[in-house]
Length: 399
Ligand code: MG
Image 1: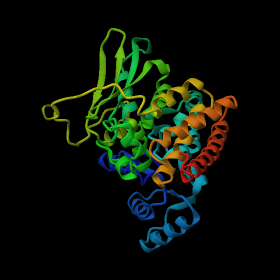
Image 2: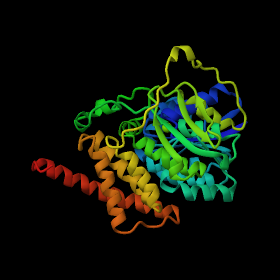
Image 3: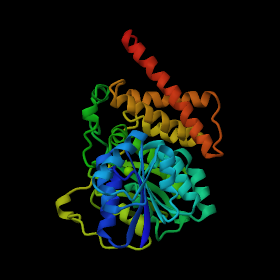
Image 4: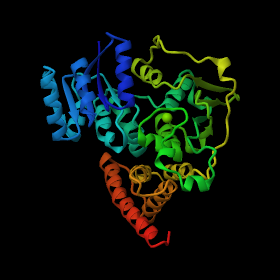
């Protein structure tokens, strides 16, 4: 039985991971779960999987969970709190596979620590790779850890690259659904509401990543993620809009062949692949019905309406901590948009502003995880100040 720890067990990837664990029973045993704030679900998961340790966001969540578990007569798991708890889960001594599925920068340190211990890390949380991909790859090489992508595009690329030599690959092509504003005008996007932005056409996901899909920052982050996962230059990584989300990504080879991975939009496939690689096991889910698809379309992305794409390439070119700055500015801006403080198009403006501020003071090098975390802190302060400025300007009618 392989022991599994899950960071982010109550989110969409976490729940799907547990479904894969159930389907492949008794292959995996869950030893540690970190679940943030959804205590009701975490109590259910604890009752069912009996992990040795659980981690929650705060002391009051821990108290709530303890009470629930007591009433269920299930008090065998040890409960931890906050970052300390996430680190306990990520470094559980028995865990062979760590599924990294938290949202945002929060996952960086725990994911890094799991890599340091030489674990297999099935990574769905893209921000750690964006913030410190170079360090994570170096750490993985030194400690013989495997990083297997769960993000559907990168999982598709991993599958396409399995049998290929690196010098025979010309280009990686990430597909993007285009999100809810694929055909919207710039004016409509300026006025877009939170509800409209959360209305993703093909994938059901958490709110942060759904807004990232609407701005196409998700694809920008994925370009950076692909760069660090597979070692191709930014010029070798392209984005194509594919509204049907059937082709999950492609690689182009030197002889002009294209290899693609196709499948239904169900995260259980990439999760199972990452957990069982290099084996391929049966996954009994509905299959693609090719005739019913009728058409697969591909378009070039509109870089003017979706400035997040070019900003991501720029951050990658700037190097050092610039991708961490891009990521933090995006996280703060998305939270502000979700809270109704800024407009939809302000998200990319704030990211551009943060990158410019970072460039002005000279882009710092990325030599340690602390460098990435410091850049993250610095950017959060800067971007929050920009948001206050923006609000003042809009109140006085100057914006
Ligand atoms: Mg993706």
